[in-house]
Length: 524
Image (cartoon, rainbow, N blue to C red; front, top):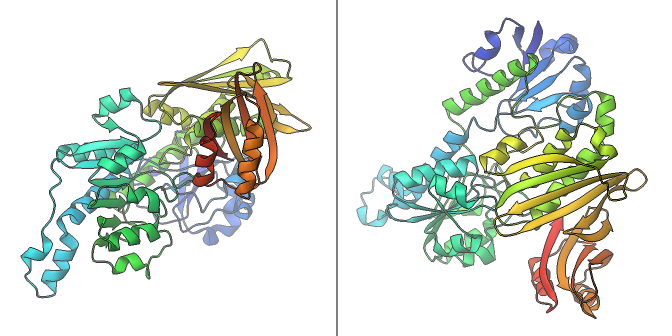
């Protein structure tokens, strides 16, 4: 018999998988009401009201799983749970339909000026000419980020005979054809879409992705929608273009700072807004409760879970052995993701040396999670990474090598895209930590952290000098530099670490150097 604590309000209907299980004793009480019994519980289910701290986890000494009925896990100390061998699960799918429907409702309301017309008629006015709207039929809907919500939104847009134009670095041609959408670059979406809606996670790469420069590239009269994360659309830039008439209107469910009581955007007549309620439906709240209840029952019955946020349960001894390689592969995946911006079809992972004696399926999933997490509109981890990769048509696998290339251990990852391949090798050295030792066949040796610039160039006299001078002119100090070449005068690479983040201006300046054929920034 397992004791389950449900510490936040959830409906009986949502908890049915637990209540109907003969192996479960379900207690619906606040944490403070069962202070003396905390050590007896095997699982805890929470919404956002309960904060699961390291202290609480320590008190719940028998705890095996923490379940968050929702997407966000900011109220759970993931590191403390992982160290304690406690699995954390959430419900990323439960609100997909609600959010997609809310987004489409906002698109309709914005195009037809429904909130403004509603306010006008309730104020005693009858002003039909003031609220001339725009048809959705035949319009191009730009979707930035094509995960679960983006794909559901595309289905609804097609039902209205709109033309979905999609930007997503991981959208392959095959998946686009299957879903009936047109893949495009961000530039193509900006310049061609009549309406643009964003559905990405908020990361360093996506924060302000619709800012002063990119909004300026859009069609005059464009409509912008954000029901994803506050900050993806830069609010200062949005206000500027709304006031000068370039952006016809905006619909916002999320804001950079919430609650958005005094936000200047709310004073504009061409802005409609809701208070972060895209996922707030009866069905969504029921779905997330039922989803995590089912996950808890599956886990306690000894079955794998689908939506774990952290490592699967490991003994402390095994965890300590795997941890260095787990962190290395997560970083390698992140590096690959930032260097491989084209659609990806397959990822191969090869292991050589001492690491082959460990459970490498965990480290492979870690690499996949590192690769996908910055680009997907849902939490990605080493458990659900394989499912998300499959959703996006990315195949992956692992093999053991007889050759460790002279190292005690080696991890070799190859990413195959539609038009190019990218590969790196990494190793873990106890005295020095994780190291990247090869990129696309070029030998290097650097610690993967901080602000990096990856450069492909022709091996010519003066290239390194030009780089150093350019960075100095932009007040950027070089911390370390690794260079690699296969033969004198041929292709070569540089991996440069600098002391602060690169701006797009500096990156474009680097790319303008004649001998440089490619330059990408990597933030770790």
